[in-house]
Amino acid sequence: MEEVVIAGVGMHEFGRFDDKDYRDLGFVAAKRALEDANMSLNEVQAAFSANVYEISAAGHNVLEKLGVPGIPIINVENACASGASAVRLAYQAIKNKEYDVALVVGFEKSPRGFLPGAGYDRWQEWTGLGANPLYFASSIHEHMVEYGTTREQLAYIASKSHKNAVHNPYAMFRKELSIDEVLNARMVSDPLTLYMLCAPNDGAAAVVICNKKVAKSFTEKPISIAASVLETRRRGDMFVPAVSAPANPPYPTVAERAAQSAYEMASLGPEDIDVAEIQDVDAGSEIIYSERLGFCPIGEGGARAEAGETSIGGRIPLNVNGGILSRGEPVGASSLGQIAEITWQLRGEAGVNQVEGAKVALSHSEGAGGNSCVTILTR
Amino acid sequence: MVYVKEKVPVKEGLFKWQDEEAKLIVAKCTKCGEMVFPQQSFCPECCLETMEPVTINSIGKLKCFTRITAPPPGYKGSVPYTAGIVEFPEGIRILGITTEKEVVNLEPGMEMEVIVDTAFIEDEKEYVMFKYKPVSQGED
Image (cartoon, rainbow over all chains, first blue to last red; front, side, top):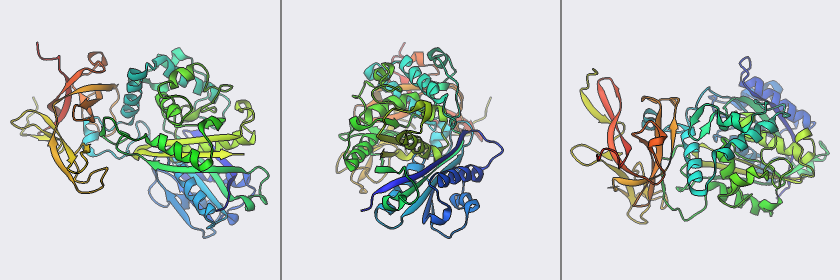
């Protein structure tokens, strides 16, 4: 087994870019990641692309402008976890000595409004059950009923996210929002207001993954991949587009299982994580996942956030560059954006939002189909 | 007045409704007892073709709910509407639309009854769907 590192990362800004297509976005991110790794596509032995809404061979079309070296290119679609799933493929191939260098590039031009095509049967769509926010809202509502989580705590999360994003050049929303502004925004799916939900948008991100021995000749700042895990839901996770679940499943949720596998793989625990980017597709999800990833006891996520534990300077800073709530979610690129952000954190290059002395970082992405990816990086 | 030639369910096999009490149809595994809705022939736990359809109690407890104000993709009904998860005594939770337009009419833990009601009318057909109705309602 070989040790695997990240040799370079790059992003195209996340936002709405009506004059650019997915090729333009992906090209910029891949170019920046290769430049960061001091490489050209000629050094890359395999490429994995992550995208949800384009039709066919999209990764091939993105990379074409950087060269046509004849390497294998695999297009990965795994909903919100597409990028991290592609990283896992590259990670496994390098770990097993199949390649020394792989490029992962994720890109998206998201449709406007509620995202379509999350796997709903047509009767679900016809009757109003085919709505992603319905799932997010129901989950956090149950959390509120069971543990006393409050609307103010949800607003706190959204406000924290927007404050963190002010200094992030890659984020879509870079304006501070007060708790009152979040609470008084349009109600989309009770209890979630407009600012408590992420906006699907456009963007791209890329990561160069390398055998550690080979990386030395390209970069002086390799970041190790200590774990790369993908799990999918069991019946107990009533995730998009599932309609039913057992009332008391005798096993953990998919996020708990993915985290547990990742911690075991890395020989680390949640207490070792210095900074994390987690799937804050809505403010409620940040609370729920902060618990399931082991950062605080079940039921306490809202209160702990409100007490500042997940803010910059707190015990376990989460989504310190604004997370998905402020970056927006270009679905195929989203989790690669997380991985780029935590790579900068571990290199000490995160600027104003740097978590001092960060040595271990975690990325978590979860979405339709019940995919859950946890990636742990160390320096 | 919209002319309706026939009533049809939004999908066959979701619920009993014609000439009988409205009940949801789930699949139950004959080996391990796991239940799933909508019904399917393979058990999600055993991964074997061991499921058979059974109806469940028409009353369950509302665990959580939300109100949707903008029409999601493909939706043929009107907004706003509310939806929630009901837990049935057999030990299965099922997501469904409620009869209520406002969340003020809903309370966590309240009993909800499965009814079959109009979802939408299209091409002279009335499509019907199961909905959750607060039990206290309509008894006065």
